[in-house]
Image 1: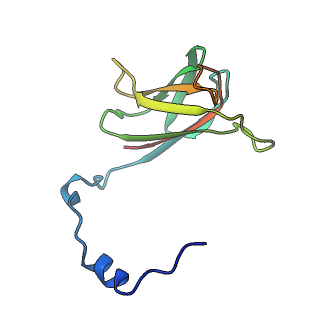
Image 2: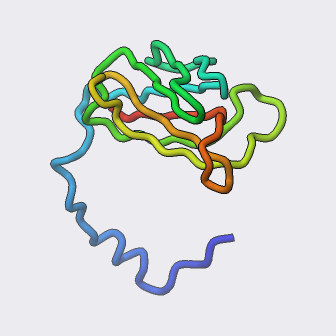
Image 3: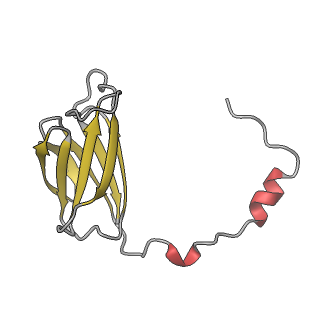
Length: 124
């Protein structure tokens, strides 16, 4: 349960101004996503064209548009709807040399490269 805001917190929050108003997403922005199994197969997605496993714990997800200026978020997660996702870690980055792709690495809970299913969201 969240703590109750202290007195005056709402007024202070209402008075705040964003410092990144000019850096927001354009009106043409899209939310893209991919769900990929541990073998690198694209299970489902929106705007996702293909996915493949490049090596142990290394994947490439290709989208139908340039994502070089996008924000990417990934999480280890099941590609189906039954069971529990394996424990692990994930990192995401733009794919070197391929402007419409994202490079994903997955690791076990000890930080060792390991194949893991994952969910990837791209705000482009």
